[in-house]
Every structure is written in structure tokens, then in C-alpha cells.
Length: 477
Image (cartoon, rainbow, N blue to C red; front, top):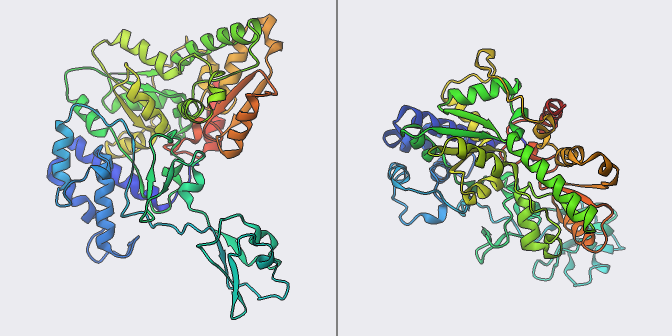
């Protein structure tokens, strides 16, 4: 999922500029200048139709960084300084972490199959003959698709001998495994919160950067300036995000202003123990056909919203974040607890966790290092790791990591009775597989990760997922 493209570069530049203003305590005075600094007069770097639309979209993106949804705009004349003041005055973060900039949405054409100029107007006309809806007609010797008749079955493309018909996806809709994002009557995309599992794929897929994530950065800097301690809970996937040791990364996070940093792997120890005990009881003793993991909040929402027949087999064990937050709250009862993680699904989970106050993404973490001048690669920042954490718990971030940890935690007499199945990324085929498992599962323990490769491939990561997976697996040894 993680790629480098211009929308990500713009997003990270905007985040860096806003973090710098937050750190300098000059946000209200200078935030309205950001769109003009990023797209100055005469700039050759124009991404949209004109420099003025670029600036307007940067303003909407900045609203997301300040924690506002685009749908919350009541007056277009409201300045970013006004939004900054409102952000500092509010006392809670938003429940729904995603918003769509409808003005940035290009209203991608809904008909996915298009005839190119490679059409030879052949005599056989297999595209026309095989179209069951009569959607293809020949005009001046060229095939044409009637969008009012086309049902996007793809038979025309399959039968064209010249490959003259191509499939053009709507990227955000194509990426969503549950059909949660769709067009309104004006052709603009909207996210249905009742369907959404917050996997964040639309966020990464939209080539126009129209899907925006709401940030908690303002609340984080408010916490830094309060008398209460601020504690970071760092997800295991962070180990693969920077080309340095986990000791250096944790030490660098402390330098940002956190009073303590606790590895979520410490909570994973509890998850491993509880899930292994639950598997032994539910499956090996009581005879349940299988059990699935419950660590991925996107999968948890998928099962309960879209695959109710599978929901009964989901583990009752809570996620590592939940247990790590309990540990942190016992140690720091009055602290602001901030989860640092790889995806928008964890932001949604954090909202409902009674012990987590805020969420900071890896992408935001990286921009904080840059904006605040903290070098995560300097060995002088290193701190000792918690030696009580099981190495396998640091491997949760990679696919098969949860399964491996749970299998290792089973009693010796039970280890050979576990039959693992791994769902490495949720897509439409994976959903079909899970539905079939409710009737007949090929194993008795199913690990499900929403992102291919695991949390190292979440929508907010900043490192190459394959490289990050190798780093995480090496640490887990």
C-alpha cells in the first residue's frame, strides 16, 4: 500500500510546516500563509487546473491536519487561523477520522471499460456480439460503449482480439473491499461510516488526494504544554520505519517531548498469553471448528459489520494497544496517553479505548522528527529496551507474526494441534474465503491482517513494507 507519489509528498510537506508552527507556538499567526508558501505566485509546480485551486485544496488539507472534516465547513471565508483557534479551544477529538474533499475529487468516470484508438473495426466484432446488454455499437467503423447500457461486466475487453478495450478503475472504489466509498448524484465520492472498516485504502489509492485524515496534532501539542505527563505507546511496526535501531527510535520519540515511551509489544505479551489460552479452551477443549485473531481493528469491524457468520469465531482477546494502554494508565493515572501507530484503523480504535487519549501516525511522527530537528539516526539518543518483553511480541507487525507468537505460547502438548491459516490482506477474495470458512475452515486458527504484509504496510507507514517486514522479523528473533 505504501508508495511514494506527489499527493504523499504534498501531505508530508504540509504536516511538516504545521508541526513546525505548532512547535514554535506561531500556528495562528502563520498558518494562513502555508498555501501561498507551498504554491507561491508564478510557481511552476501546479498540480491542478490553476494555482488558486491548488491553494484552496491545501487549505482543506490543512483543515484535516487541524482535526476538522471538510463537511464541517460552514463558511468558505473562515480562515485557517480561525480553525486553529477552534482547534485549541475544543475539548475532544473527532470520532470519524476520514473526510473527502469533494472539490478535489475528479468524479472519475463510472463506466470502467473504454474503447481506445487501437480499435480496428474488425468484421468479427466479438465485442458487440458478446455484449449481453447491447451496449456496444459501431460508428464510422469504430466501437463505442453506451454508458447508459453498460454494466461493467468486461466481456467486451475479454473478447477483443486487439486488446483495444481497456479497464479504467475508479481507484478509491476499486481499493475498498466493502464498497464503503461511492458516488453521490454529482459524481463525487462519499464514505459511508456504516460500511467503512477504516482500512485506509481509499486514503492511499486516490490519485487526487481527495481523501483526508483528521489529525490529533493540535491536541498533542496542547498536551505537551500542560502539566500532565505525556506517554507514547509505540506500535511494534515502528521498528521497521527508520533505518536505525528500535533503541534509537524510542529515544528519539522521547526527545519530541514525551515523558515516557512504552512499547505496545508489552501489551502484545498479554494478547499472546490470553489468545493462546482462549484457543486452547474454545477450539481444543470445547471443539469450536476454528478461531480467528482479533488484533486488527479493520478485520474486527469487517467481521461484525459484513461477515456476521464469521464474527462468532473472532477471538474475545483484546488488542495489544488495549493492554498496553491499561499498563500505561496504571503507571501514569493522570497522563495523556498517545498511541503511535501505522494506520487510520488504529485511530478509530483509539477513539473508543478508555485509556487512549490521542493517536499519532508514523507519517506524523516522521514529520515531527524533521520539523523539530530530532535526528532518529543518532546513536546518542538510544535507550535500553524492555528486556521483559517476549521477542515474538515485537513481531506482531508482520504477517504471521501474531500466529507465530500464539503458537509458541501454547502448552507443549498442544503445539502440534494448531492448524494455521493466514489471510494476508483483506480484499474481495479474502472476504469470500472467510465466508466459506464459516462453513468449512481448512484450519483451526486463522490470522487476519487487513494490510498485505501486516501492519508494516498500513496506510500511514513511511518505509518500504518489504524492508520494514525484514527489520521487524529480525528484531522478533
